[in-house]
Length: 248
Ligand code: NAP
Image (cartoon, rainbow, N blue to C red; front, side):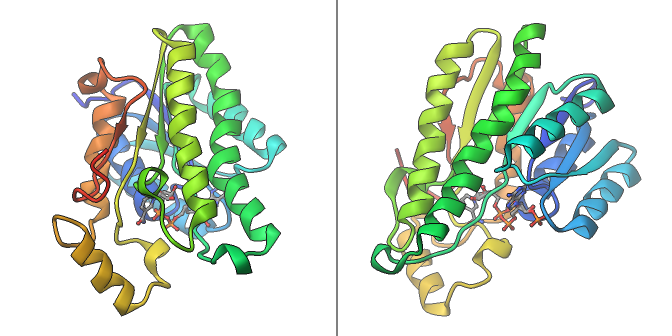
């Protein structure tokens, strides 16, 4: 029997990379999975197929998490389809590096809207059902940059720092019924790092105590832990599969 048998989970941004890895693992652990995506329908369908081929149950739902109506509909669809959302993983995020002196206001707004407001919106709508049922888990994917900050990423660092503070505040508000935790990965080999230079990678590898960029498979077990029985005594925490990058 899987760790998430008879549970249903909504994972935002699960069409690829970290979100897909978490969706697949949750499916294998027995959860019915709602695979949210923004524009990559094929990717989301592929995630669903992988879960179904392994005997699991999943659907894909398009929604921009930064849009109030779309976030509300996403949560309603998930609840209608699988009865409830037992585990919500706020994973959707974007990263568009720019120095502050050259940053468009739109770039700042887009990052905060997706990475922070999106987490707030989906949680805002999903928390009602969790509180009504007296149980639930929220897992927010932050970043080690929300702890240590990074040059050219003031907007991203601010959003992810906000996600960590949101996690702590909400954990206090909804305890003991709902548990709220964050994951703050270090640099992870995904599409998000596609535009980085060789020079950046070498610098980053030298900076991370474990000396390398991590993989999706090295982040996923933390989400499984926090969603399942192993996470029973965690709330308000930020766990960091980051090769020692932030050490908070
Ligand atoms: P990724 O490969 O760029 O994938 C991003 C995912 O988010 C995609 O599924 C994308 O959907 C979805 N998304 C983007 N904007 C969205 C929106 N407005 N509404 C709904 N979905 C949206 O990123 P990743 O590396 O897997 O990152 C996943 C999370 O981990 C992010 O929150 C990121 O900040 C965090 N993180 C990543 C790293 C890293 O080094 N990779 C490190 C620390 C933290 P579409 O495919 O449909 O566009």
